[in-house]
Image (cartoon, rainbow, N blue to C red):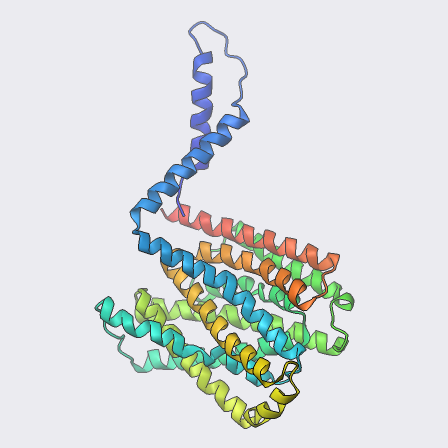
Length: 380
């Protein structure tokens, strides 16, 4: 993201336009810049700065950024659709879907290990504090995935995705409390707007349920989705705190290391939950009764694990290669993508209230992104 002062640009355009009118002895007449010239000047300036930013990075950087962005926009919506498809086709276990969300952690490890050779780096030494932080984050991630599993069990995928966007609110709140991140008027505005969007969905619960879902189950899914979003925001802030307090650096392989370790411990905790609940034993009978048979059952679970991990990898890479602002933009885009895909593929109900909530949520993301951009300008 490039930085420039909009106010000073507008003032320079006004001066340049008025200069020919201010001949000596002439009376100064009211003159205003032509909107088309001003707009063209702004577009031209942004284009030049974007080109300058492009030239500062090698082509490999932009290819990786494009692939990472595509992973976020494709993998996360696909993972949400597959989670809901599991339940709509006969799946019932909340632990299995939670387990699927972290079962793909070896994919991140396969990407991490080559970086030690190609980038000539060494693994970050583990001490007691760092190990405990990974254990805590892993436990919280396992709990977070379980909460989201309840949400997808009882809510349409489009609704669950909209509610999950409230994690932005909690990320801003916990980031301010724990990491001392700045909050300005635009960020506060975003918090209020996204909260209002969640309220709109709650008012439309009667027309937003599947036929086999009771009102009580819908309310349970709604509550767990919001709680999961709050926990997700806390995890995000705690992860940033680990970088600030314990690691003191943010390189690509260190980011991957944290993701591998947290996912590994989340996998261990979730596996314990699946074993205790005896859901592994129930998978065989569940697969037989699954719509489409055992093959469809396995494909949903396998692709669910792959897409979720690819989405996490994409988000991690975007944060490292670009900024939290771009990650926020992509996160804002994937919410309507998930909702539209759910309506087309799963025939999710899409009432006027939900469309309004979608628009309001997008507006809230825009306000948050604008506020984050302002921070970047202030610090430059």
